[in-house]
Length: 128
Image (cartoon, rainbow, N blue to C red; front, side, top):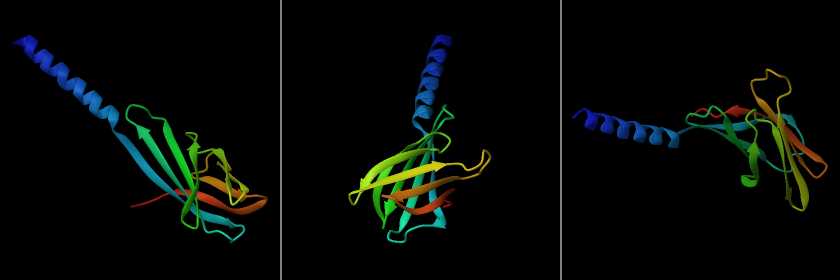
């Protein structure tokens, strides 16, 4: 009888661990323009921050939109810093993100298309 209870307890624990490892926390962020650049495109930046259960490392995916069309997507590191490159309208598209000071609450990103700076953006959490 005691062996059966131990087996049932072990099976329950195994399912609980498997169930928890599949869950994740997800947070959405969006851009707020802090410095105007070229106004040819309406630029929006969105970031998704995910945490896997039992892993405190943040996994960040950032997307750039021009006039509501996704034109660039890729990862940023756990501290929301990094750069992405692509091509849009036969021009080099660049996104550079990071924190201006060590203890900044928000990451900031600059978007360039060719040699034109489209703007500077602060990435803030989207509140639902």
